[in-house]
Image 1 (cartoon, rainbow, N blue to C red):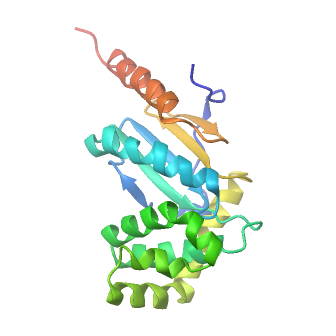
Image 2 (cartoon, rainbow, N blue to C red; image 1 turned 120 degrees about the vertical axis):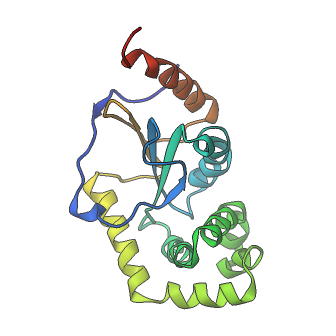
Image 3 (cartoon, rainbow, N blue to C red; image 1 turned 90 degrees about the vertical axis):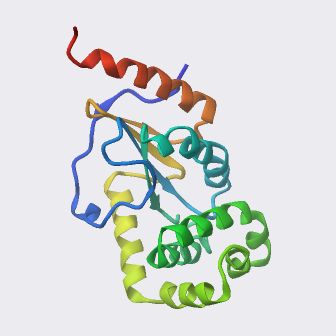
Length: 205
């Protein structure tokens, strides 16, 4: 059974949520939207991204059944999380493909860069030297820091204190919040039941 909290009315847009959404995959018109607030230094976020989000993209978002939006929320307790988030946001400024590669590398290589502190080495495995130079430069740009600041403000406005935190918003406008690592099997069961119910909301013949 899906261990989600009771449905709540979808949160309205706040002043902190005016920048374009960073979508991992899917379309805004998809019947289900999933928002992920995540910290690159958090081990739970890494497992959630690799074991739940990645198959979710392949099985549902790629066919526009689910729209996945990613939010950076480096926690104060994690000393290098902010640097990792800035590097990821810098990669996003280069384009969608460099951003996705950077995210994959940061989560896959998390144990290594947490041990040696060399985040750039993880990115060097997926970005070419010119891209890496640009990413480092953009990570130091105040504009990138401002984007991260707005992401943090958004998380705080929604009373998020831990990662990963996800919001599952269905087409009827209900929002469900999950403050723990949700397995792919549980999320898939919920999505299958939700998507099967969708035709019942339409006109009957």
